[in-house]
Image (cartoon, rainbow, N blue to C red; front, side, top):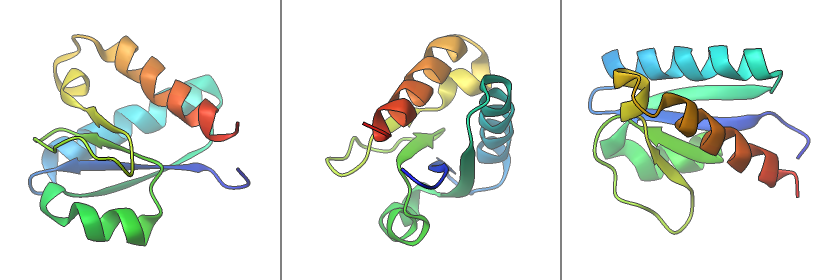
Length: 100
């Protein structure tokens, strides 16, 4: 892949929890030396946002059903701290596999 991975962070309103989750993902990517582009949006706009952002994966802090076209991860660990490291590992493993 010749571009940074695009992570679409989604919540119900695209204001509060998606902002917190996006900042945490950006900080963790920087710590790991991984180039990413993080975009935010509402889960209700998922189809349009996936197309317009060319997202590689989604982290959702609100309920978003699994999809066949893109990996979807629950962002709840980014809000609670419980399972946060495991979520980061899953996200960045998925990104590493995009290069394969």
